[in-house]
Length: 554
RNA sequence: GUCCUAGUAGCUCAGGGGAUAGAGCGACGGCCUCCUAAGCCGUAGGUCGCAGGUUCGAUUCCUGCCUGGGACGCCA
Image 1 (tube, rainbow, N blue to C red):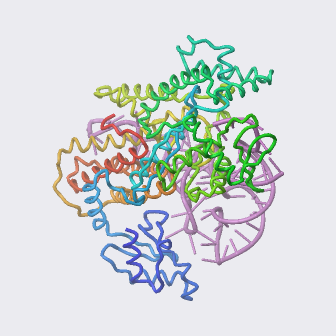
Image 2 (image 1 turned 90 degrees about the horizontal axis):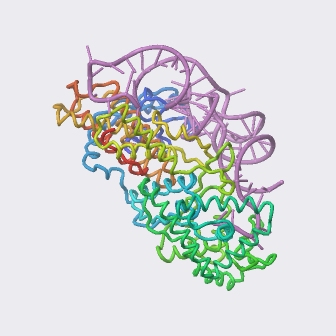
Image 3 (image 1 turned 60 degrees about the vertical axis):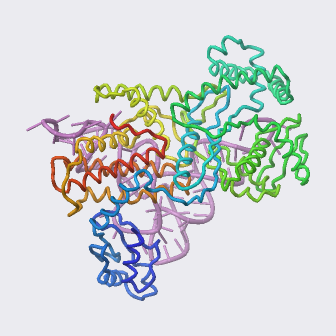
């Protein structure tokens, strides 16, 4: 559409019109598009006001209804039916495929996401990584990429040495079997409490991890058991969220793949000994990257290097992205630098997509101190609330449980996805459970209303478009922007663009719905029903891209 | 101390080189004999952290400062 506007303006402008010069006006009374003429004033040696008047006077195009010059702006009003008709036609024809593109040219993008740690609860922080990663995967797919979702399970590292030590000292098999993650977490917390008084515990933990890494059978058996129990618990949450993975290769998967990386680093003369540990020096601007501890055990960075190279050879990705909290940005910078020094030209295709932390009382939540909010409890509460709402508002609904699940989970998902700036979020259960205003349930409710109208309309309606009122026009302009919203959300790796888009569309629809009674008014009825149909298509597709369900009734 | 990130309405946040800076929540006032009131309509509320600079024009770009959060070798 913008292209048409540019062409139309070009016929009337003495200077070339660049796409960035055309903007959307502040308010709808000012038209649909605007051209500020200030930048042309210098070269044309005329006042912006005069330039605008001259352009406005000579613009002529079938898609332009009128052009006005105001304060140095050319404001353009589109011919509404001429825009609406082909747009609705193409959305109805394409259905859910509206907004699909071939931008990605079938390139593979690996997504490192979710990555909970075994023997630890699934926290609100993991939720962010999971739902953002899942939505980015859906967006990539819609834009013609081939996403590969990798759950890089945290199943290795010194923490397991600590856990083994704690279990052997204080744990019991029955308790772990009864409630695995809860019990293991308590052991972990106790370890850190006691280690504050007795620092030798930390050495003991490190030694236990070294034994685990060396393949000591008893340690290995315990580790395997902890892992199985944990994965079972995580699966319940993934089922609820509707998230699946293409790979569960966690950190332990790379145990036998690290040595070649270390050797390659050594070969290139990049490894330096420092206080007994092996590091790669990264120059002045960055601290060195630790590859091996002084006891010979590996570190996070070692495994990530192995994982990155393994993913490159397995998937031949065009991009490899990591949905990980912004407190790890230094780690990813180091990772890229080390790969660069190793001569991997694809290091530039690695992108860390950081997100803010979820804070409690303005502070980072710490697993070690047991200050943590459990996602599963939050989800359960949200579903219960949805259930109560259904009982109160629509008790005759047929599949109540299913809908309550969709709405409860939708509320939590959306509250997280609608804002994805990098800054931190204060944990606020009440806000996450909101069902009014800019929320997931609001989107679902809007969509359910649209379906309800369509069900009752039964193909009624007899006229075509004669005129498009302001309510309808708001919806049309929103619908028109969907492909661009998908494109931006994809290239910026940012689901919140879709979330906000969906809110804008739903608001436009509800305003229309609240002010115009579609079924009792014969005027433009088939056009209006087509419009409602298009809203339901695009709203549902937006929710799908966010990983949300859209119940037909609620 | 160094680096990263943010500072917009009472609260949570959008936006972004240009015309009167927008939503939601909360507050206040309307609207269900009518398509789902999880909704709609209206009112109140902002010197866009502070100071300079670039520009015809800065809340937006640059620099400095202040404040919050984070990271900074044997955690991940």
